[in-house]
Length: 204
Image (cartoon, rainbow, N blue to C red):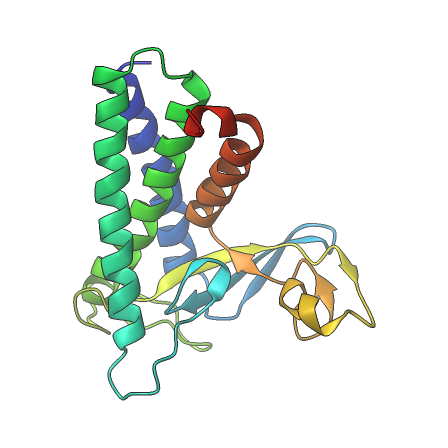
Protein backbone atom coordinates (compact mmCIF):
# COMPACT_ATOMS: atom_id res chain seq x y z
CA UNK A 1 0.00 0.00 0.00
CA UNK A 2 1.15 3.54 -0.64
CA UNK A 3 0.90 6.71 1.41
CA UNK A 4 -2.00 8.07 -0.65
CA UNK A 5 -4.18 5.00 -0.03
CA UNK A 6 -3.38 4.88 3.68
CA UNK A 7 -4.07 8.61 4.05
CA UNK A 8 -7.45 8.14 2.34
CA UNK A 9 -8.26 5.20 4.63
CA UNK A 10 -7.41 7.24 7.73
CA UNK A 11 -9.53 10.18 6.54
CA UNK A 12 -12.52 7.90 5.85
CA UNK A 13 -12.19 6.27 9.28
CA UNK A 14 -12.03 9.67 10.97
CA UNK A 15 -15.02 10.98 9.02
CA UNK A 16 -17.10 7.93 10.01
CA UNK A 17 -16.10 8.26 13.67
CA UNK A 18 -16.73 12.00 13.88
CA UNK A 19 -19.96 11.93 11.84
CA UNK A 20 -21.49 9.36 14.20
CA UNK A 21 -20.30 11.20 17.31
CA UNK A 22 -21.62 14.55 16.09
CA UNK A 23 -24.97 12.99 15.17
CA UNK A 24 -25.28 11.40 18.63
CA UNK A 25 -24.14 14.60 20.34
CA UNK A 26 -26.67 16.78 18.50
CA UNK A 27 -29.64 14.38 18.38
CA UNK A 28 -29.64 12.49 21.68
CA UNK A 29 -29.96 13.48 25.32
CA UNK A 30 -27.24 12.30 27.66
CA UNK A 31 -28.03 8.73 28.83
CA UNK A 32 -30.67 8.31 26.11
CA UNK A 33 -30.86 4.88 24.47
CA UNK A 34 -32.03 3.80 21.03
CA UNK A 35 -32.61 0.09 20.40
CA UNK A 36 -30.98 -0.93 17.13
CA UNK A 37 -31.48 -4.71 17.19
CA UNK A 38 -33.64 -6.45 19.79
CA UNK A 39 -32.22 -5.76 23.26
CA UNK A 40 -28.62 -6.77 22.59
CA UNK A 41 -27.53 -3.81 20.42
CA UNK A 42 -28.27 -0.27 21.55
CA UNK A 43 -27.03 3.22 20.94
CA UNK A 44 -26.65 4.65 24.44
CA UNK A 45 -25.22 8.15 24.65
CA UNK A 46 -22.70 8.69 27.41
CA UNK A 47 -19.64 10.90 27.72
CA UNK A 48 -16.41 10.12 29.50
CA UNK A 49 -13.33 12.03 30.56
CA UNK A 50 -10.99 9.12 30.39
CA UNK A 51 -9.57 6.29 28.37
CA UNK A 52 -11.15 3.74 26.07
CA UNK A 53 -14.48 2.09 27.00
CA UNK A 54 -15.30 4.81 29.52
CA UNK A 55 -12.41 4.19 31.92
CA UNK A 56 -11.10 7.21 33.78
CA UNK A 57 -7.80 8.25 35.31
CA UNK A 58 -8.50 9.76 38.73
CA UNK A 59 -5.82 11.90 40.38
CA UNK A 60 -7.75 13.18 43.40
CA UNK A 61 -6.99 16.85 42.70
CA UNK A 62 -9.34 19.64 41.67
CA UNK A 63 -7.88 20.01 38.20
CA UNK A 64 -8.27 16.98 35.93
CA UNK A 65 -4.58 16.19 35.51
CA UNK A 66 -5.48 12.65 34.53
CA UNK A 67 -7.37 13.91 31.50
CA UNK A 68 -4.51 16.19 30.52
CA UNK A 69 -2.06 13.32 30.91
CA UNK A 70 -4.25 11.06 28.79
CA UNK A 71 -4.48 13.73 26.08
CA UNK A 72 -0.70 14.12 26.07
CA UNK A 73 -0.27 10.34 25.87
CA UNK A 74 -2.66 10.12 22.92
CA UNK A 75 -0.83 12.90 21.07
CA UNK A 76 2.53 11.19 21.64
CA UNK A 77 1.07 7.86 20.49
CA UNK A 78 -0.43 9.40 17.35
CA UNK A 79 2.87 11.09 16.56
CA UNK A 80 4.82 7.86 17.02
CA UNK A 81 2.40 5.76 14.97
CA UNK A 82 2.34 8.40 12.24
CA UNK A 83 6.13 8.35 12.12
CA UNK A 84 6.15 4.52 12.09
CA UNK A 85 3.65 4.40 9.22
CA UNK A 86 5.72 6.82 7.15
CA UNK A 87 8.90 4.87 7.93
CA UNK A 88 7.39 1.52 6.93
CA UNK A 89 5.81 2.87 3.75
CA UNK A 90 8.98 4.62 2.59
CA UNK A 91 11.77 2.43 3.95
CA UNK A 92 10.16 -1.00 4.33
CA UNK A 93 8.00 -1.59 1.23
CA UNK A 94 7.94 -5.33 2.02
CA UNK A 95 5.88 -4.65 5.17
CA UNK A 96 2.70 -6.79 5.14
CA UNK A 97 -0.44 -4.91 4.17
CA UNK A 98 -2.12 -6.10 7.37
CA UNK A 99 0.49 -4.36 9.52
CA UNK A 100 0.03 -1.08 7.65
CA UNK A 101 -3.77 -1.24 7.87
CA UNK A 102 -3.62 -2.19 11.56
CA UNK A 103 -1.39 0.77 12.38
CA UNK A 104 -3.66 3.05 10.33
CA UNK A 105 -6.66 1.87 12.39
CA UNK A 106 -4.84 2.62 15.65
CA UNK A 107 -3.77 6.03 14.33
CA UNK A 108 -7.32 6.92 13.26
CA UNK A 109 -8.81 5.68 16.55
CA UNK A 110 -6.42 7.65 18.71
CA UNK A 111 -6.87 10.75 16.55
CA UNK A 112 -10.66 10.43 16.69
CA UNK A 113 -10.72 10.55 20.49
CA UNK A 114 -8.16 13.36 20.55
CA UNK A 115 -10.52 15.46 18.42
CA UNK A 116 -13.31 14.95 20.98
CA UNK A 117 -11.13 16.02 23.88
CA UNK A 118 -9.49 18.91 22.04
CA UNK A 119 -12.45 20.57 20.34
CA UNK A 120 -15.88 19.35 21.51
CA UNK A 121 -15.73 21.48 24.64
CA UNK A 122 -15.06 24.51 22.46
CA UNK A 123 -17.75 24.01 19.80
CA UNK A 124 -20.68 22.34 21.61
CA UNK A 125 -22.93 23.25 24.51
CA UNK A 126 -23.02 20.74 27.34
CA UNK A 127 -25.07 17.57 26.90
CA UNK A 128 -27.52 16.82 29.74
CA UNK A 129 -30.33 14.30 30.33
CA UNK A 130 -32.76 17.15 29.56
CA UNK A 131 -31.13 19.01 26.66
CA UNK A 132 -29.49 18.04 23.39
CA UNK A 133 -26.17 19.76 22.72
CA UNK A 134 -25.98 22.50 20.12
CA UNK A 135 -23.20 24.02 18.08
CA UNK A 136 -21.82 27.28 19.37
CA UNK A 137 -21.51 26.40 23.02
CA UNK A 138 -18.38 26.35 25.15
CA UNK A 139 -18.70 23.82 27.96
CA UNK A 140 -14.97 23.18 28.44
CA UNK A 141 -11.52 24.39 27.46
CA UNK A 142 -9.03 23.02 24.95
CA UNK A 143 -8.21 19.33 25.64
CA UNK A 144 -10.87 19.30 28.38
CA UNK A 145 -13.79 18.12 26.24
CA UNK A 146 -15.53 14.80 26.86
CA UNK A 147 -15.32 11.79 24.57
CA UNK A 148 -18.64 10.65 23.08
CA UNK A 149 -19.47 6.93 23.44
CA UNK A 150 -22.53 5.17 22.10
CA UNK A 151 -22.21 1.44 21.28
CA UNK A 152 -23.71 -0.83 23.93
CA UNK A 153 -24.04 -4.61 23.60
CA UNK A 154 -25.81 -6.12 26.66
CA UNK A 155 -25.61 -9.66 25.29
CA UNK A 156 -26.67 -11.59 28.39
CA UNK A 157 -26.96 -11.24 32.15
CA UNK A 158 -24.06 -12.79 34.03
CA UNK A 159 -25.01 -13.35 37.64
CA UNK A 160 -22.30 -14.40 40.06
CA UNK A 161 -19.52 -12.90 37.95
CA UNK A 162 -16.11 -13.21 39.69
CA UNK A 163 -14.80 -10.00 41.20
CA UNK A 164 -11.76 -9.98 38.92
CA UNK A 165 -14.07 -9.95 35.89
CA UNK A 166 -16.46 -7.24 37.11
CA UNK A 167 -15.09 -4.86 34.49
CA UNK A 168 -16.75 -6.99 31.81
CA UNK A 169 -20.29 -6.33 33.06
CA UNK A 170 -22.38 -3.24 33.78
CA UNK A 171 -24.20 -2.31 36.98
CA UNK A 172 -26.98 -4.78 36.12
CA UNK A 173 -24.50 -7.61 35.43
CA UNK A 174 -25.00 -7.51 31.68
CA UNK A 175 -22.11 -8.68 29.52
CA UNK A 176 -20.64 -6.86 27.58
CA UNK A 177 -20.91 -3.90 29.96
CA UNK A 178 -18.64 -1.30 28.35
CA UNK A 179 -20.02 1.49 26.16
CA UNK A 180 -17.61 2.53 23.44
CA UNK A 181 -17.28 4.39 20.14
CA UNK A 182 -15.95 3.69 16.67
CA UNK A 183 -12.50 5.03 17.53
CA UNK A 184 -12.25 2.56 20.45
CA UNK A 185 -13.33 -0.24 18.10
CA UNK A 186 -10.68 0.70 15.53
CA UNK A 187 -7.95 0.47 18.16
CA UNK A 188 -9.22 -2.74 19.77
CA UNK A 189 -9.70 -4.61 16.49
CA UNK A 190 -6.29 -3.51 15.22
CA UNK A 191 -4.44 -4.48 18.40
CA UNK A 192 -6.07 -7.93 18.53
CA UNK A 193 -5.38 -8.49 14.82
CA UNK A 194 -1.72 -7.43 15.08
CA UNK A 195 -1.11 -9.57 18.17
CA UNK A 196 -2.70 -12.68 16.68
CA UNK A 197 -1.81 -12.50 12.99
CA UNK A 198 1.18 -10.17 12.68
CA UNK A 199 3.22 -10.81 15.83
CA UNK A 200 6.02 -12.40 13.77
CA UNK A 201 6.63 -9.11 11.98
CA UNK A 202 7.25 -7.27 15.25
CA UNK A 203 9.57 -10.04 16.51
CA UNK A 204 11.98 -9.53 13.62
